[in-house]
Image (tube, rainbow, N blue to C red; front, side, top):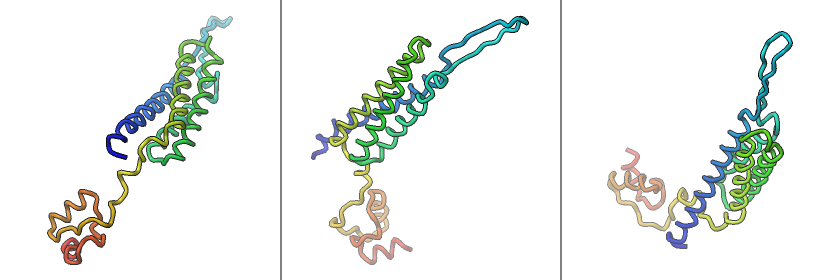
Length: 184
């Protein structure tokens, strides 16, 4: 696979992960906001206001939104199989959050926002399940270079340059005198 082949799939991965995280954040915001308020005046002339949040209407919506967001954040460091599992978790969490909004559409604008964000979260989770195999590995850039490379030169500048480029100064590719210079 060339670098040109991974660029579109890497961009796709970024878009899906960003959409999932933002949808989870919007769903969490919508589930935690005030959905309705009722003002009543008692017989004594006192006015009281009772408010109900999304958690009062759909107690599962906020935990589901947070679980979906956590699943997308965990995907940043996960392999293909784990990404697919986390995508399924995020899709189910998004559907549950959307259900919380859909069941209470008459409670104002926040349930509509919750339903929309939940559906976007579910769509991003489903896209992850379907496309995770085509995305580049998250940890590939952190893997050690192969041991078959050329030996590092023996001067200290080359040792520092090797460290900057991610090479291990204790590897067998460094000569004994270079290792000694690096320790002093």
